[in-house]
Length: 139
Image 1 (cartoon, rainbow, N blue to C red):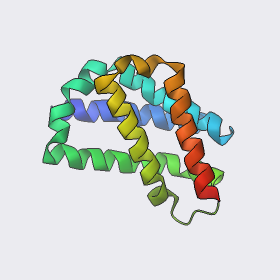
Image 2 (cartoon, one colour):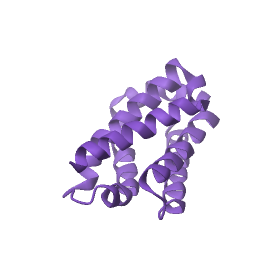
Image 3 (cartoon, helix red, strand yellow):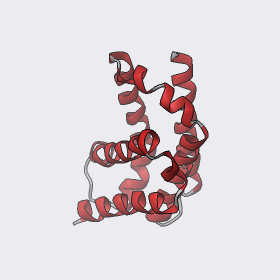
Image 4 (cartoon, rainbow, N blue to C red):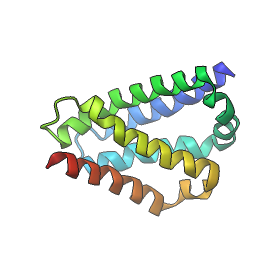
């Protein structure tokens, strides 16, 4: 089970990292859209695995693994976030709330409404969430 978790999270992190690097010079919302789209693609392509890993991820060792992975996502996304909201003192820490919101919305979709992972409106709403957070933090 551990090997499956590692492979799955590596695939997600790799897709996000690749999309973030490719969109490095894009406007923040475009970069966010590309990055989230890459993440949703991995989720869609591995929906059965995501569902199968739900219970093991709720266990104590699974929770630590998720926290570590979220930290890695934050490290990948923090430079773009810092560019779009330049006055932040701790972009990785301040990005945590947004990542938790994304994780919650995407997890809910995986388990309760998997069809939404393919819907443009879902991606639009995630991007709006990110843009709203950046705008609020930018004030």
